Length: 116
Image (cartoon, rainbow, N blue to C red):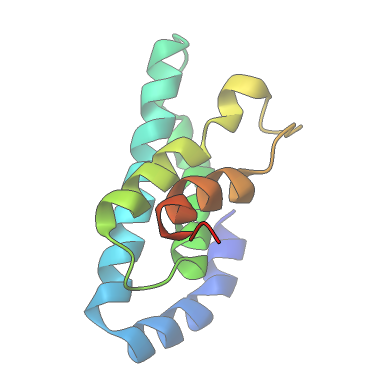
């Protein structure tokens, strides 16, 4: 996972350059929410909380931050990244039965969709 994160850093840095502090805060909140949710879920499942060392939650938070609009309220970003790891309840990390990205985007962007 570390190599994937390192490969994403130039694109992320360009986004921070273009959008400034908003993008940096969004990334911080998304990564914090993803790591916190993974730790909570592991604690509830009575498993090792230090599983976050594999950096999969950090990668999920970074990817979510890169696809969300920088003007999104931070609470939506936090909730989206927190619910993004709902896949842990449905499957192991080797076999995902639901798409993490679809869960995130559904939770984050739903309030902004218009009913036309």
